[in-house]
Image (cartoon, rainbow, N blue to C red; front, side):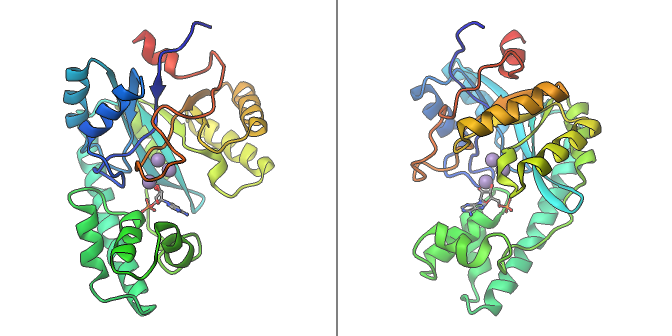
Length: 281
Ligand code: AMP
Ligand code: MN
Ligand code: MN
Ligand code: MN
């Protein structure tokens, strides 16, 4: 295998729950010697045009991407679409539907939090945090911090927003089959994001990935911050068995989260790596 250029196939901008604008991310990628970067905002392509312009100016390769929230057997999963065509006509309706789901869910989250004694204006504070971007739980975390209800975003997730907490409001996200379909039709690869983050045992995770492979996903993300050497080995074996591609990225959101940096994630040596598809393009 040839030596790889710097790359990062998973990150967020202000178009969703990231702290930096798409151009700021591109500038940070240049500093981190990242030559191939995918912007993968939650449920929106709104940052891609600015990112493309900035990438052209900076001379790095932007891989247009998205991280779609979806359901598999009532479980929420994140599916990365990498190398998608942002101009594929189907995206308009798909994004509008997701925006509506998120706006409706945000109102429900606010009601649940207010019922727990959080200030009445929490919805306005969260909307202000989201700006024009897709609103999500991290904006509520920042709003709770701004309102002085918690002293860190982590505490906000622990007490109010994390799994099983009042702000963890269910929504009718699209079925993963639909997400796979639109990613494929728009020319991208569909990749199960951060497989170790779904609170599944490894044997259940293996079954999940086998089912998703039957449904047509192209691959799984393996090089994620926080995966152990052992987990990398196990996931690689699954990818080999099921003939799946693999991907890597930092899932960068915010320079304050010092444990994630652009271009930094465990190295996964394999010719199944998706980065080769993009280098060849
Ligand atoms: P949402 O898409 O609105 O459901 O929010 C999910 C996002 O919240 C993820 O993409 C992470 O950025 C963030 N998140 C989820 N769980 C936590 C947690 N325990 N601590 C901090 N951030 C989290
Ligand atoms: Mn996020
Ligand atoms: Mn995710
Ligand atoms: Mn992500």
